[in-house]
Image (cartoon, rainbow, N blue to C red; front, side, top):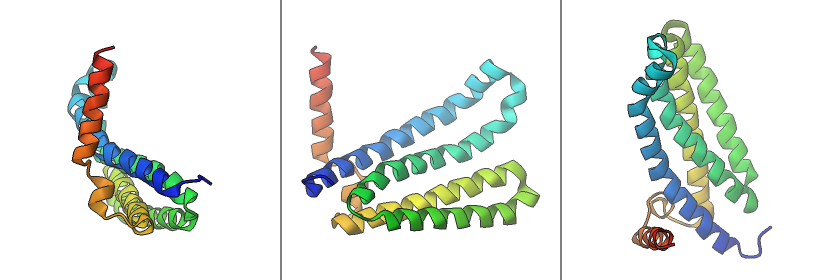
Length: 160
């Protein structure tokens, strides 16, 4: 276990704060580019997968959040919160698949996956916020200090 859990929590919180906007922007860019890239690489026959991709991309961001927050919870001795979030996500996904997929097909499976990852990510973020005592906005939203620190790093790299 780390010697300074509070410092580690600051690092984890900063990673979470940047993952959400960067992940969302990346997912958006992929969603916009997908019709052109898939058609170019694989042909028009792959056009039907584009709506599925649009449903799955936000799920990928949620999945990434789970994997950034989980080590922080483990470090803090809260592995049970991760287990609870995982089992809840599994129940949501299986329930939605059994309910939606017979009539909705692959699109419904993508929606079920998004819902499951969303529920699990919400649960681990709430657990992290509760355990660290940080309000959700301090966990999820980049601060001015984050932006200034990132700008300094970018300026340093640009002058190398």
